[in-house]
Amino acid sequence: MITPFIRTVLGDVAAGEIGRVNYHEHLFQVSPLLPGDELTDEAASRAEAAALRASGFDAMVDATPVGLGRDPRAVARISAATSLKVVATTGAHRDAHYADDHWLRNLDETALTALFLADLTTGMPPNDDGPPGARSTVRAGVLKAGIDYWQISAFEQRALSGVAAAHVETGAPVMVHLEFGTAAHEVLDVLEAFGVRPSRVVLAHADRNPDPGLHLDLAARGAVLGYDGMARPRSRTDAELLDLTADVVAAGATVVLGGDVARRSRYESYGGMPGLAYLGRRYLPRLAERIGHEALSDILTSNAHRWLAWDVR
Image (tube, rainbow, N blue to C red; front, top):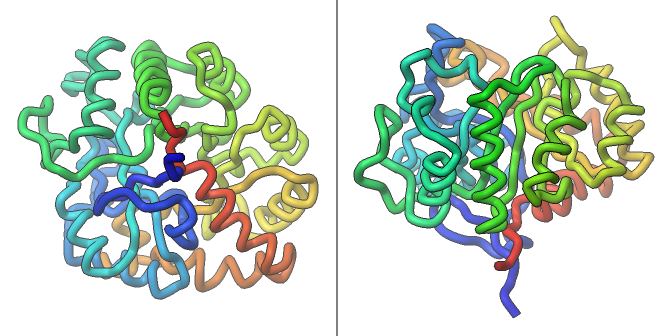
């Protein structure tokens, strides 16, 4: 019998041995949507990863997909230096993150599938400056797609198709960026049509549409709810997210938690705030008071492990 595994940048780990997981952060990222907020400094990102580790997390998903400044060998060095297990990501973000002439837009579904499969099984290229040539030995462990606000562009549809095909071949877990939590059922419909079970899909940013009824409908289909909007009081307060989480967990939904801090101006090590440690240091103690330590442990370990573990093929 093959033991279910999670693929990290330093190698495969048994699913039960990865510890407490932050499902969504970024160590490196460059996007035209975020000018001046690039994450490109290895030393600063290493310090931020160390702070995340010290805040009580054993592992994180680096959710930066293809073409947005990935640096897999630097991520592997950071993981080794901080003892923070890191799962890297392949796939494509929503349309708006790529310039009109970005090389990724030229790939059809077959080429996208091949690209994502190579990242998962052979290794990611050393950088995302252009179409892959040489590849590193650092492999991705998560597939990601993204859609815009209540729409799926032609490029996003191709990416969803490529992600689904790569999942069906490998069993790697899937994450989908939802813009303000919209079109969640529609995304699940698309992926299910390609053979991806909802239980293998995290709906990232579901909490930015904090509707517990909708979330329980999604959970009834088997989907994993990705909550990551903490420390953003201009849109949703932590108090609202605590209420939402308590409601859906009490009703049996499967939730995973991350920070998705994602910007230089929000990283303490880059001179901003609140930093990657905010989730563990500030938010989780409050959540534990609401739902109890056992339920919180399930979110950070059991729920995340089940999602991240590759289906044995």
